[in-house]
Length: 140
Length: 140
Length: 140
Length: 140
Image (cartoon, rainbow over the protein chains, first blue to last red):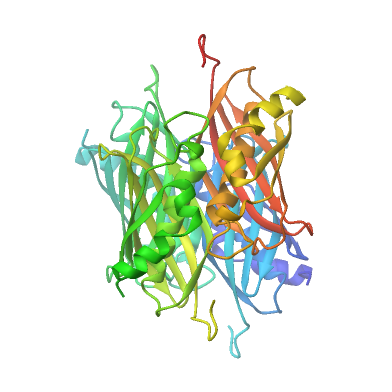
């Protein structure tokens, strides 16, 4: 499943992405790509650098979409757990996140992601376990 | 070291906390306590529930302060890595986070945290590794 | 469910425990306690200190039993993922491991464990996600 | 730095590797490759399948050598923490482990590893933080 431009635009209008500066670029075949151009309100305590929690947020949501792209249209997902390593200071915005589903067994997907800065240096690594849910009859 | 009310108030005025709904309540002896009354802009994709990245953010920042409370006044900290488990849906705001330094060797602190909902149910567990930095001569 | 002395003895006879020096002491109500008196063959590269993989092994198996004690007799479990932090060198054998199920939703259990040395110092922290399986009609 | 055949042979003679069935194949430029042909004594509770702790052990030691290969000859390393995901049952021995240093800052190395079975399927993913130590004047 590949997300259409319309679907991407709909997701990109969500308030969390707008508040933090996240943007989803593509979702397809167990993968997803996004970017983070952090809003100044989430750059604390170091001006110009997104908080580690925001770095986590962009990676988590991108991994969730990577996991979802393996499911049926309209499926949902939940993060079971995730581990993140901060490999370098996140100094050079914007950042790009690439996530890839490594394995899926039943409704559980194992996904990895990297975040690189504008120079291409890896600033964070994550690996997470996601649980997929079937589409609901009356999803919003 | 225990943070004074003034120091807490100064930290609580930061833009990340205001944008997300985080508030630091106490920091002392390797421990820290905070709360999350999530702003609606970070409650996505499920209205009323903070995104998992925001759950991570409150735990990460609370653990960082727990680690810092063992250092000298004015020290800084950086998250080296962190693992989080989402043990239950985060439905019942406000949430309380308690963080505790389990061990410290040199400039590395190992910290654990729990997030409970308004009913006292554990909604997330985290354990992180933090690196402490000495106070700078000319810190902002 | 509490494991009887007979059940504990049966588990303690397994080849992995004998090869490494693990012993299960009690399993009850979502908790488990074990010890590690490491065999010299698993103390490498530092003589007298168990390899980090063996430290992980005792924590993983103890957490699995903690998770299992919430299930039906004869249930099985599998580790989905686990995160470990080595908080201090594992110098003072024997070690004791305590594991506790923090939360269980459906067939997924979230478990935490600590390993302390003979002096009571924490040498490792772990948190893992476990999947429980129903007893099989014809289990070996 | 690339390990010579002699150095590899010396490491492969260690008791932990012999007890478990681990063998180091190559170490070079921040990377390492090893295999696990698990001894029956570590295949428990499922005959023919290595315990999850042994799966962790081969990945941890391979990541440590990957980290070390960036240091000076004779350096030591210690695992600070590590996260592992079990993506599929480890049924088809022998297994191969590939580890790669993603980033290194000062004496801290961030390393990732994959374990694949004889069919090439990924059975486990790990990411760890390692601390490097300078060679000692009088190392044993």
